[in-house]
Length: 265
Ligand SMILES: [Zn+2]
Image (cartoon, rainbow, N blue to C red; front, side, top):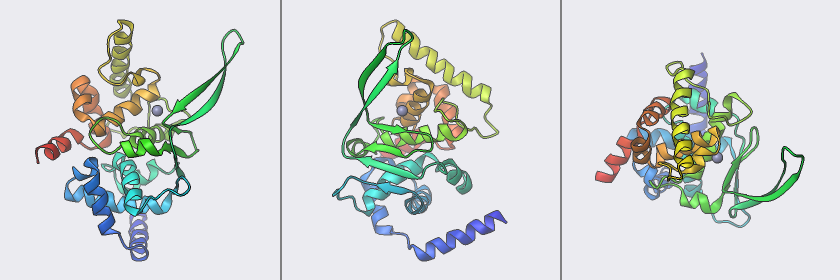
């Protein structure tokens, strides 16, 4: 019954909101991550992105020119995370997101922190994006513009992966809800091996195989690995093949094959 209802709802949506084919093609052509998709994936992602655009509020800086293909490009990178999942699972995964806010530039906030001796420390913290449980996803425009290619940097994927992580807890703890074919123990052990390796590199004063921001918190380890999985899968697979293989099962996608096909085309 549920899937009948879904079909009916999708048909009604399509009738009311004809899919913007030209703008979607333009979005795909512009971003290497989207250009690399095969026809089937591109069509599915396009439809889902179009629905996301109507379900989530997108708040932009005043006066910014951000046309439909810009909006599709941004939300498609969010949709890419759940592209391998069923329609229902994909919708469920982002159910906690109501708003995406794009700010004009990297933003700062004042942080006050009490240390163990009871001394209050104040500092300014600069972040490119920040995600709170139940709160909006906040992104800086400059970083949105830097996202979308195969460099390993993608603020949209990074922040949205925190949201996936928070689907089963208030904090981003690096432990998102898993499907039944991945055991929690396997997840924990695979990520712990990466975490321990990063810490060992830092203790020896050596450069880490992936961005050392992953070594700051288990939630950041997950987000940085997701970012690499989709936007520099060769780097992640080279550094931590077991983790790449685990994420391939988790996301039900293989960006490494996709990237190689794209680069050899
Ligand atoms: Zn983060």
